[in-house]
Image 1 (cartoon, rainbow, N blue to C red):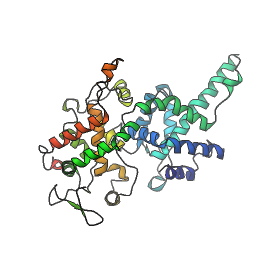
Image 2: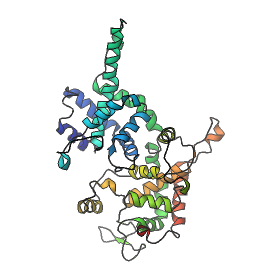
Image 3: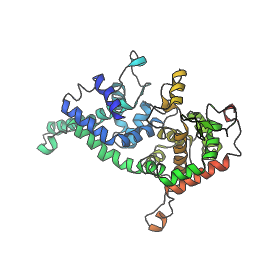
Length: 372
């Protein structure tokens, strides 16, 4: 998938000036290939922070939160962050003639460009200024201090020093992906497929006219219980609320910066799930493959949609249910003693509780939630 992203970046020529060395650009490409999955998790998490834009694009406020909450840059660097955000836009297609601004949004490949610019600013530009100040004050600067990293090295430094520790503890990280793809979870979904399909159909944009229990014909003409509709983020939010995952007492409550950082690190203070968490789960559960014909047709027919990541199909819905369960039920132990650590539920147990909750709630859900 990253090959497509890199083609967009390379063909735009946006890196020609900031990384003029072709070998270094190749090193950067290899870096992104190696860490694409992890950085994609990070991108999806922050692209859903603010409710003002889409869950598949990054706004200025979301980029700013990403940089400050991971401690890469601080509020004192706000002017530099804004400049990097604006300069990372690759204007093409219908946006080619649009001048980027603080109100624009960047896509994933532009986020990768921004990350390169951030690494250069953090580890090269600021360090060069620091060295200059020391020399002006008459201080001797050793060769080890004066030596500046290359652009690829600066990018690796950002990843290993600031991002890797966060990624290891993110609820939406590799542990979650492994759990969702495990045999136990697949069997759990299969055993409850009828009820899970029925609930999905109640909230999907295009329910079968003959009822939610109607079986579907697959490509081979065989009966299948897999629904072929889709839901948007608003429908998924209503699902999470109606099935009891979202605490009604904290609907609309805003996270403090401190609380949000704890959520990023997987260090939540409570089991409460907010609509902001729901948006981030919707984003994190999106598959990168765009080969679903239903989604393709929906995006092509609806001028208000520009990417399949704005829609959720059934397989993504199942993954989202799993993520809701882990966020809702995996309480994080306080203290360091082994007994308290053992109180934390496994991912499978959390997902099992989530599936049970969805299936139990299916009988009490209004039959036409979209009309509400």
